[in-house]
Amino acid sequence: MTTAGLRKSAITGGIATALILAGAAITAAQAKTVKVELTAKEVTVPVDNEGHTMAAWTYNGHVPGPLIRATEGDTIEFTLKNDAANKKSHSIDMHSASADVLTEFASIKPGETKTFSYVPEHAGVFFYHCGSDPMIQHIARGMIGAVIIDPKDPNAMPKADREYVLIEHQIFENPEDVDSMMANKWKRDAFNAVPFQYDPVHDEHATQTLEAKPGERVRIYMVNAGPNEFSGFHPIAGIWDRIYPSGNPKNVMVGMQNYTLAPGDAATFDLISPKEGAYALVNHSMRAALSGAIAIIMFSEKADPTMGHGDKILVR
Image (cartoon, rainbow, N blue to C red; front, side, top):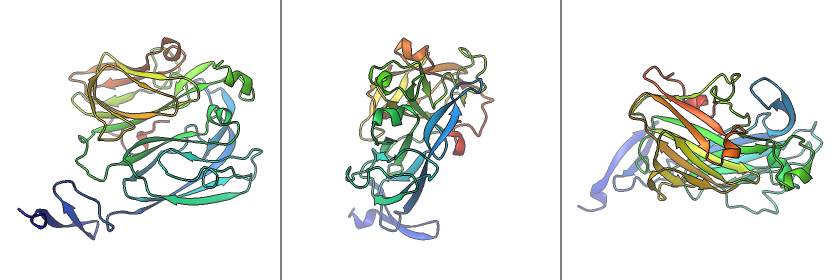
């Protein structure tokens, strides 16, 4: 059969597109412009499950910053604003972009705005963070986040039933003490900014866990924000069904017990439980795990159907 014979006409959202069955290549009609606006804000944020706070530097007032999501081939139109009330210059280092570090990634002063556009060249999960000097302090104080670039081929990976984003980073006792950051004298480790946020086993003040049903494919997008430590990501009581380094569907590993992420790296992890029960997702460095880098995922037939969907992908 000819290539033309493999083509079908389809209507998606009222737009005529051409789907190539052997590859589902994206067309100009399918590609879209995704507008993303982040505002650098210097605020106080929770630092534990008891409500204590610390002075942080953030995107949009949260640590981590908002989840950014687009599809391979889209145009991301990115705008960064530095709130006029801030005292420091801030910037963006977008790992999903090919850009000019001296222009697009350059710092802007309080009250300034910058905009640039790019087309993601690869599917995957990527780190974004502030690159202003000293970069280690901007990362440690909370200017971190994740970008998911979905593959243009919807069949490139098995369909996930639920998705969660975990961003690991170290927390330093004094956010002004850059020397301690350089000496790696961190106090706590955390997924999504709060130690033991999803672990009521080790912290009685924790109020939530991740949830799924037995047999569901749970996709974990894991970003190691550092700023200093490697992360050996392991599901205690389970095994990774699939791992995709950098989240790229072309990089597939099967049946893995652990996978190491360097600072600034990311990967996609698929987990399936055959029965009800709990798994503990950990950095298998015991110092990191017992300092806060543990997330419990509960597999139950009564799992909350909203968890792992919509705004419950990055659970705050």
